[in-house]
Image (cartoon, helix red, strand yellow):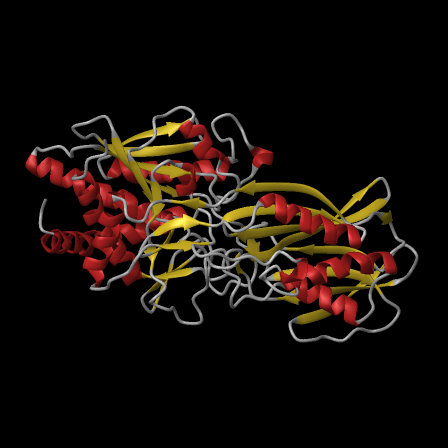
Length: 483
């Protein structure tokens, strides 16, 4: 195998050569608002037209880069470079995104360059890294053409379209194609993610009440269950003027059918990823606090708002009695993602979604039982749940060591694999990890937002270094035996 330092130098020179093309291709993908849209799903676009369009754009980029491509009935696609063996190593990234949400300073559907950062929805999660994976493969297309020597294994770049919700794209793929010998997803952080917390989802329903009988006309907030909402809104009946508060703006909203004055109460928080609540401020929780402190609820509504208080009182689950930690993972996190008002046949109720990332010291069954106890005490019902158990790979395995050693050689550091609260494609494969591209040791300026939040951004230097690392890592993986 080439000396790592020589290969790093070659990869870095390649990155400098192609970088402007990389940024242009990221921008091409960011322009597609590829949010899941099952209402408009069709044969060949099972998650809606926009996610499929983003996959097709990615495959078009791969075609340009000399890779052969395949659209897998719209569920996902792949681009590959044939090797000496039909057995293959893979990368997997995704072209779908979470909804844009509110609070953006920059255009979310274009790449903006500012002071060495790229900003736009998907630049780090995960359209930017997706483009990196294609250009890493292109490096080996050029090498193969130059030397006439194929890689030991086929290299396949999988392009998903349903990662942000159910990951049904991977379920489809694994039911029809052989697993890769080893796979990494560029959808997390360096040095390497060898474990992911379990993810427990719950939806809690308030008691129903007659339309028009309550103080709260509607509660709405959040866009997806796995993101901390930066905005929420309530419409209430109130006989007196209401004042603004920190993060709260009150607007007159006319009258109801009986002539009662209506007010819209808008909360503006700080959104972010459900697995990383530090530094965020949940707008739904802010709204609940305002409603309770101003007594803007009936006794029946107060029961639900008290449940909300238990949920939003902390992000470690202590309000619900579900605190957990262990030796492999950080402590449990618990957030409320969306709230909405449902009206059926003159009856109204509220639905609150919850996203819990949990370590191996607890289980989904324990979490469900605890949430049900608190919900029932507040006249609420748990109406839907799902559970994905924690995922863990041996950090001492040869492929894992090869990747971590590559990162350390490129950075001069001595890092070890870590675990996270986020969930990636890796958990669906027998032999897979999440590997970069972000680097927590390089904090971004305050105006650069997190993934899933407004002004999502990433350092160009971080991405450029990641592309060079991916090239060297793939070469090292190609030299291993997978018997």
